[in-house]
Image 1 (cartoon, rainbow, N blue to C red):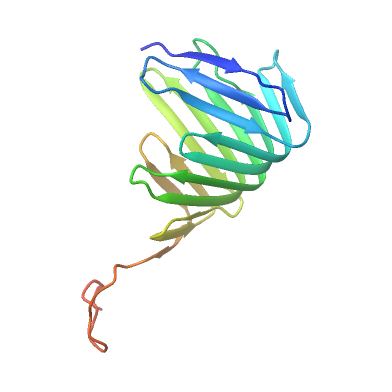
Image 2 (cartoon, rainbow, N blue to C red; image 1 turned 180 degrees about the vertical axis):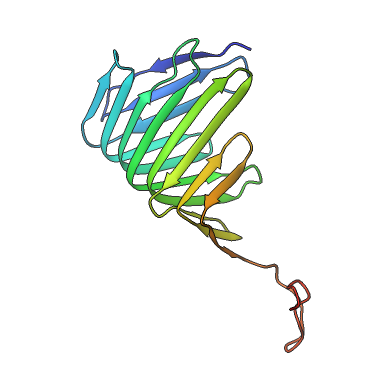
Length: 179
């Protein structure tokens, strides 16, 4: 399956919208705005946004102070690489419809196809946190694999919300291991 990518530039308040067209029925799109200055270096295939950066895509919102996309999708080259820094906040909806909230100092977005294998990851570093209604995770780094729909955490620390039970006060909760 051949993917074609079209970059649609909208110059308003430092904005760029990237539309990825594929043979799939749904289109992927990305809208990025900032209140500061943006630099678009077409020869280097790089765009930089500064100050109050907001990025929106289907099911995801990101805010940060600085965003550099130093590899943008091009026709016959379905790759991208972008780095968000300073006060990075990402909110996204997972496959179960649950809202997930992440924060970090830095987020690196990578997408590339090698052979027939597609890799798409977001690597959070600098005090990364992931929170949803059942779980809070932090560690040295958190890698979110968007294809496998899983996380890898170095030096993890987790808080997991256990299901409610109808235990009588003083009784042992049988969901917890006995030591």
